[in-house]
Image 1 (tube, rainbow, N blue to C red):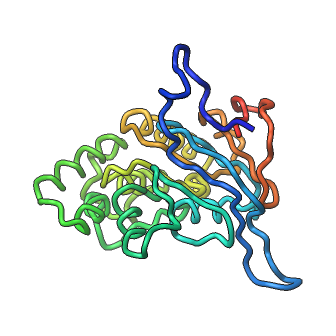
Image 2 (image 1 turned 180 degrees about the horizontal axis):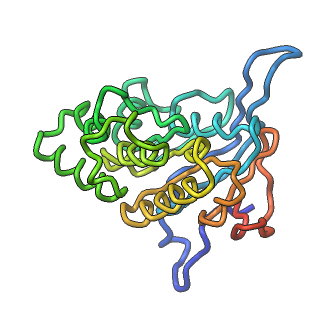
Image 3 (image 1 turned 30 degrees about the horizontal axis):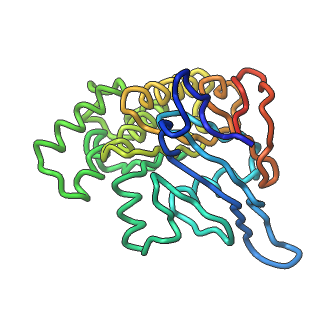
Length: 253
């Protein structure tokens, strides 16, 4: 099974960059006995650097569990997760917090914006947490709001923005600390089809412009064609193979 990005002409295996994410033999079960839920059953794959990889699967297939494990928000029962060359199992609780703060950005279906803060203030929250200088914070916030097309909405609060605009603010916030890995869990799940497509196109553009690696969970077939690779989960297992998917490119696992 090969899950690396397609090899470029003239690039030897020694010259290819180390994958951003390496998952090996991942198992996660919730509960026990007859009611146990086997969310993941021996999942293994890699995510190439600088690419947008979609995790495809129906509700309950294990997508959210997988992203939580990759982001260090949960611990596997068995198996390993390596992010940016760092094995998560080797980290202390404080080191995991630092990794999530400095190297991983999160975008959730529910936006997760603070309603009392403006769009600019929401984007600036991660920078405040690491006590970035005011001038640096304001410059970065202005750049990111411009990047997601919301420069004219900086002073508005979430309740004054549409769902698509709120998700754009959430994306800008996730990029505030210049993460190397962006994890997005059903980022278009609460949006209509056209707005969801626009957000996914923006996410792809951000991957290119910011040099970020993105792992995006979605069940929306229309969005898969925007991904560089598609990984499919079915009942907690990886679907292996390289056959084309409807509306998408090659299945690379």
